[in-house]
Length: 283
Ligand code: ATR
Image (cartoon, rainbow, N blue to C red):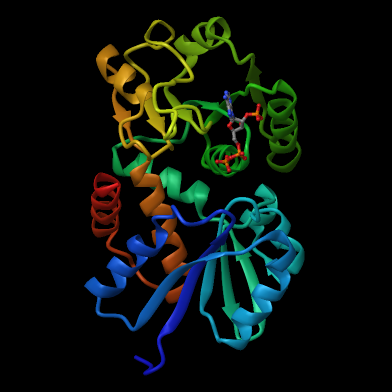
């Protein structure tokens, strides 16, 4: 191992609530790696110059979060096929002066589902939301052979995403209205429901995108919101008798995939989850 620490980090704005530094530094401690991971508050105006600074300081890589996942692409030298399709980057690797973009959100979600025993191929997956996370998840699930249904508050965003998936992957995607009735109507044809909207996220934790009446107990319900760990949607689904999967798994797995890209490392995902849960509990 080099004497000089391998510098890694996450950039976003705002960034102070990010759990990524704790999650990654716990891995470095556990594996006794000379690496250090910090959070950097970077505004859009400073994005390009910050990346240049990272090269000067010989950073190994960065995670990228809101609001830079799309805008950062124009400053990169290359973007892998997956991130290009999704049109969003959440991981950058610095190869000397070359900046390469990746997206680990979709794979992170799929690994979290698989870890809980879910199969993806041939499953009908209803995704609530059509934002950045939904893009990564729907593309990856479609690639893995799932049938995708999208429901989003702004229907136009769902339509646009469905068109993109059809054009880029040749897969048809169903769009349903974001209403209790339409979502209930599609429930008999749904195996897995994934909430990617911000509804139910701290501090508005008393909200849920759908009610118990809309759910069906045979559906697996995943929420990618991880603060709180048990969202109102997951509580409601559990009461209904559904299998539930919280957002901590996806957070840890997308981080683990980033570590694989930067350090060619098989990350201890359980340690990462444990750290996130401890930090959330202490808040
Ligand atoms: P992320 O990167 O986490 O996916 P995002 O790109 O800002 O975040 O996307 C947020 C998603 O949550 C969008 O699908 C958004 O719906 P719109 O396209 O209509 O904006 C959805 N969302 C946010 N607030 C919502 C609310 N109060 N009710 C329903 N959906 C909401």
